[in-house]
Length: 295
Image (tube, rainbow, N blue to C red; front, side, top):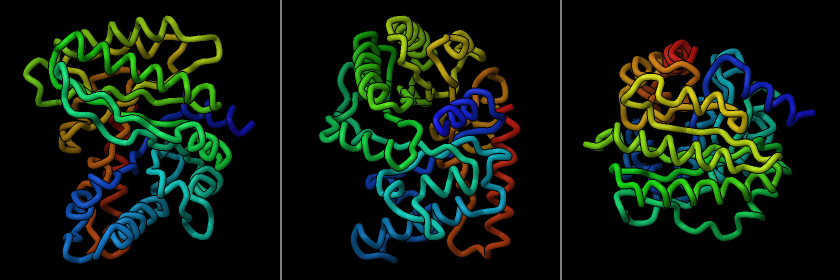
């Protein structure tokens, strides 16, 4: 029943998905934006402890509830950690009504044919089994497309759907994320190729295979409406991709059937030095802005 309730929430709920999944490579940057410089901690253990404290501060904030937040994407360390004495996935769903997802990719290979596919994911089946047992609903896996190169885009999408099938077999719902670089000089052309490749693979999915899509906000407004209407797609969500919160929200608002799944834009302007009142007010304003753009 929990899976059904989560699926209904994701498919029909109003709101957006918060991306709280910065990994080892992006954590120092996230901490700097949060007002904590690299000389303030010593080694990975302290670094990850500080980023977990930041995530807990977000997850326990008054406005981080099912009223406006549908789901949250977690880094593996976060999934295995606790907040207010509860496992993070349990806390999110039972205390906040927020559906938990897990980032499963291990980073990107070097660029080839204008794109970056995902690195191998050793131990994926065991990780998915752990996630399922901990009450996680779905996964997220990211590739990057830098230019309108048909071979590169084809490789990205084929790999994404191969991984998606493994995720579906584990009883989870994959968020397929073939990000298109917002600074690409051929962004619109790449998105047109990407849309067709995704549509082809969606049509080939099995009876029990359902996916979500996490896509860069397209240059052509409404480009992905057809994908959102596909019977194999639970929801289409948008990444902020380096746009400012205001810019990302303004672009998203022009795209029907697409909701936000923002990371940096969600945390924009939040700092370690803020009082709880200041922090909660700033986060609440970001949540309101992203929620409105996702309507």
